[in-house]
Image (cartoon, rainbow, N blue to C red; front, side):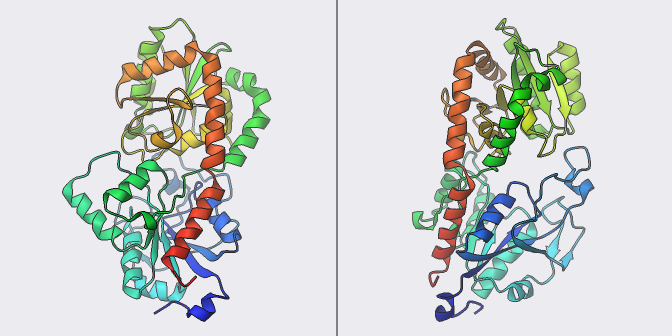
Length: 403
């Protein structure tokens, strides 16, 4: 057994190793909070460190994130990775000796950030064989029906974990659908760095008129924001069609600000030109730049399919005081979007329903502003790092009862 004896555990914090595919801007605040909590001895193991070209796949440009992702906690990278590596494909990389790696790391508890790449699955089975309890923090939800073979695989994987970290209501429903006991579930609401976004937005708010002018947004227009890759699952073409339909239903001026790049850019630009839509393509904005788009806009729109297992751009918009209109397939909808309170929800791919939501927003600016404030209050209070870190520590202590 790798675990320290009970008498040692009473004087030393549990050694917890979190495993992530690569440094991700949304995970770094949680890692820092866990490392600084003093309740556990925390470190992170990264499977790979993508270069600028690998990081930019799907965005259409090479880039690196412009905020620190590796500060405030201990980390290391797997040094015996085989295969082509990178982030492309489930089997792009593999760990040659996962059991030996865990023996070297000597974790009391292993925290996995999903099962979406083979090395995470390798470490799950290796931990099980060595008697190391596993805490799972995946992003899957119960909003879609899965085929029998996928459910069989999920049962195989989940049955080897000691505790689970649901990121929201639909995530909790996913685990419960597999018979996971309530006592094994520890809520860790998905969050972003609320403070950084809110503070940046506050500083930029006096510049709102200038920002809108820079992007060609009319002063009187209700501006909707699309923020993300221009890829099929995010349905940029649905948003453009809804904008076209909405313009035919109201005389209120409308505008769409598109932040992001991707494979559907040319199709999107062609649709805008064909229908002469009031749309600005701002291109890719890095983490320190994107709050400006939330300040300039009035409401976020996220029309994604089931592939949007959460949708952290909704958290970002809300932290900046903006409501969100989302499809009923977006994972964060049940948590963050209460229709008429913090935004609106429409049936996936129903562009007429989305258009109606946009018209309602444009015709009642006071309602829109009130929803933005309610949205900000919700994410600040309930979807924050403190709540998520607390749930994680409780899960670790449950998984290793001698703590």
